[in-house]
Image (cartoon, rainbow, N blue to C red; front, side, top):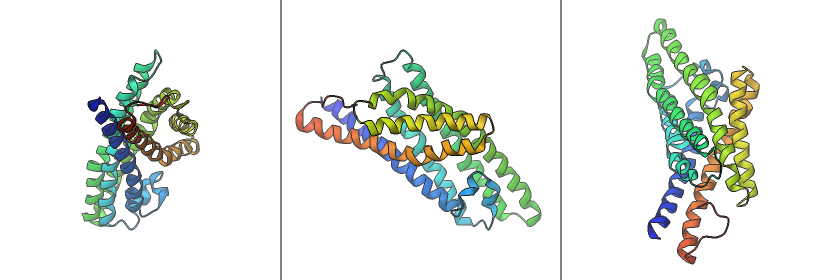
Length: 241
């Protein structure tokens, strides 16, 4: 029993940490663009009065993104595989894993190559700054418009809609939030596919806002479940453990 109990606790802590890092990712990136949120859709705005400290915040925001929105949630995705009662469970979980890996690669590219382009821009002469600015914009477009919002968000949508039924009996609000995240991923992907940017932004903003909340909620559930098992030496009916 003890290894299983520790597994649940550790799974909860990892997922909780993912949510906290995802939340901090948003804060760090907001500081990195000097709270000009239009910069994420129009990255050329990043270069307006760009300071060295902003580049540092941008880099650490992307590192937090790698772990918070992506890699630290992989254990939970694998855990859900045994809980999903659907012949499509392999497709559902593989979609989630692909989302995490593809998304982390994109964030790593921006953390390394994107950050370097920003630093080169700050060090360059006025005549050369246009080159480094263009380099950053190309890399950002590849990651943001291609890897992230065109590809990974659709994969996230499949995964979230696929696991939503696990929470139907446990908590209606959590179930609804899971559905919302799944729909937001599909909306973002469709919006980018059809070049309906207003639609894509709706899906993306819902995802960025509610993913950290959802991950923290799930993580706390597992940590609390561990404590209940220790206290009662049993699992409550309907809990996702």
